[in-house]
Length: 446
Image (cartoon, rainbow, N blue to C red; front, side, top):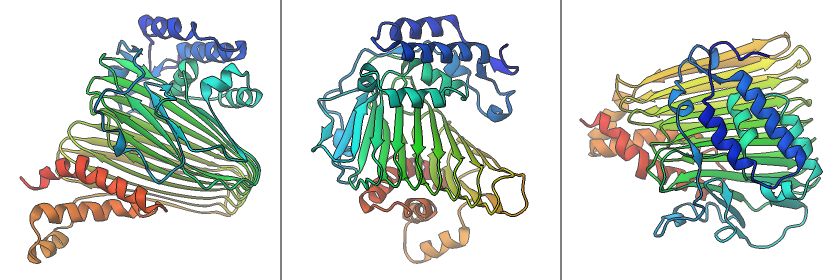
């Protein structure tokens, strides 16, 4: 097998740096075998260049050419604002990872719960867990370059198993901190979520930083939903504006399972979120919601693929973006309906708000339908703030700054309001007001 056309080679220093690290870790032979296989496939595949259709708008050379290494710092700096993300929704389980490694000292699990087993990935590997081995083997059959990179070099994460018919009510919050005094450090969180027949669970992942240095986060979450299972998975990405963040979420759904996804992307210099949904059971449901807000020279790229393979599947996608200054966003959403997926009901919508003429959006919704008895549609819109609405607010004595923020929140709230928890909704709104809107709305005030 030769390296794919239109790909970037992998620097030798890049390989040697990671190999030297993970070969020292004590893990079962099957983990080493999985890593070695993923690394060999990555070497042959290479990293995609802008000549690759899936990456034509995103330049990866700053990541590929970065001399990244694992950080040896696994504690938070003093006087950090950790409480900002603490108590996300009154959850009783909060697991914290610092530079990709679990921190027992600041993690919280109030008590043990019947019907659910949650371990760190490192613990599950050391215990030679058979279920984890099956999960790794399933995801190792396919994958793009960055999924393979994660599979080759993951250090830690969580391995969650929910037993059949367990309706787990407390929220589980996973916090991934990036913080180091070094430049060019990297982390590779990997999470495996197995939800049994008829079971349900709710999880939030937060990716945050206390470092202004340049670093790289390459995370992957693999989800396995058995018949009738349901999962609500939220992601908050508020990394440093100097960081690179590649996030992959891969979901396999069985009959009558339900997957709800929320992604809120705010931080990072170059950001890519891959979301791959495989509905391989009848009457599976997928509801995907996303909000991204960019400023400066940030570049966000979102790729969503929903593969309907069986009868009666439902999918809904709503992704909205707000761009200021010279930011750029890319959205590529694909709905694939197989011949065996009659009566599929799928809808996709991407809406973007541009705050000046210097920012740019590339949006590409796609439908690939192989059967007739379906109900599928998609839409995309790019525009600016409504001048009539702005004038109305100004005529009521509201300052221009306040009026702009009201309209921005109104645009974003179509996604935020779909969150079922008020604490979560307020957290996202506050994050936008304090860190995003206060800066990007300057475009409209000058």
